[in-house]
Image: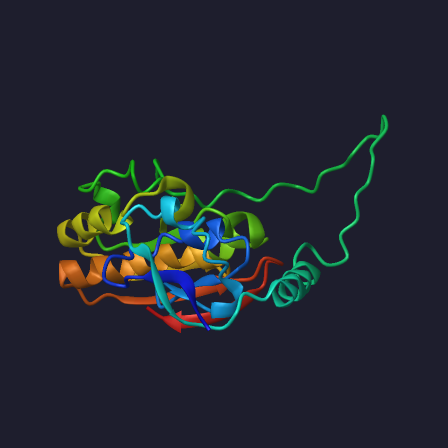
Length: 230
């Protein structure tokens, strides 16, 4: 059938993931750092995603497309809900109980500030550093984050969904002004985190730098899903 449906301009898309969050039907996802319409039958054609796009990469078009399938959407949402959350977790109400916390291990944070937006471009700690560029949520999802990822590294954090900025511009300056030895990017499996990976790759291209690196993707349950070359 011919109907109204969204169209995404990949040239304009910056991979921020705002449209992915705005789409309640899960019709949009990030593939290789760019927003794409995953399934025609998930798109209702109402365009809730349009006003969230900071680069005006989304528009309407009329074309041959599968009919909107509300039942398929509900089934997909139910499936996603069954795979979210913390397996085996239980809530516990504490009433005047004495709680014994385990001994705290030392922090591996080696510099301040940690926000990408606040980091000084010419800071001496960047010289010859192993740079960790982490999406905010990764430190909360992975229990051994300090010891496994931050130890011995300079840490920069950000959230492409909440900050709504193009990190690549700041990262280009950091890459151009410093000799970075290695880069590790940590991101969540959720689509909006693709903006972080995309920003780092884009910055390397613009800075014309070839730096050894890897992308570590974590699940919402706190497991490492994949480790890929940057």
